Length: 237
Ligand code: PXP
Image 1 (cartoon, rainbow, N blue to C red):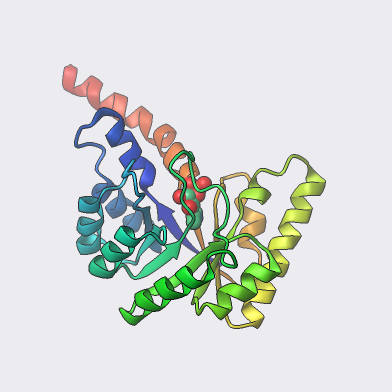
Image 2 (tube, rainbow, N blue to C red):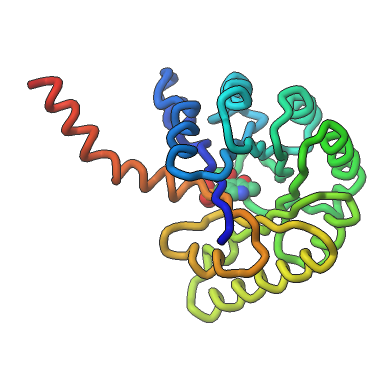
């Protein structure tokens, strides 16, 4: 059974929507760990639209499982990672206008820069994962750049429009996993996984960890909303 990394970015998105102190991502991390999360994932974006540097430093202190920092290969963010020392860094592409990470990192196009960043992070004892599409050339290049893990982008699978496409994408991910394992990479997967589509991915042999954010934080609103209203009614009464 793969492990579960919970991405808590959207707890901070909600906080930023009002510019207030709640909901607190540190408290969210604590609850996720109590519930069985195997790691806590956050993306410190260049525009700081949700998680900020203070959150990251507090999480580094408080997280008891593993802290996985999703990050671009941009200079300032790399320096922060080298200082904060997450257990793992997941290198992702980043565009300011995007709503979420849109595609895998192109490790062929950006090979020299990525190689340098991988080496600096690994020298500090940080395990390095690279978020890539399930593509043979990209996987082989990630190995050549010395990554410990790849995280296979499951976005195309998640957005499949029909059963045929869904099976094709699933097959692609299974084959990509086998290739990566064969050449000595460890394999994680994530993006767009939810309560309807996670099971077939969890059954792919060799995937170590699934990183899931949006669907879990979305569902938490509905499994928690009733209790929140009951508590407020009690206080008012
Ligand atoms: N993995 C990576 C590399 C991501 O960038 C994201 C989104 O932040 C996720 C996993 C989680 O995706 P989702 O929020 O769709 O579950």
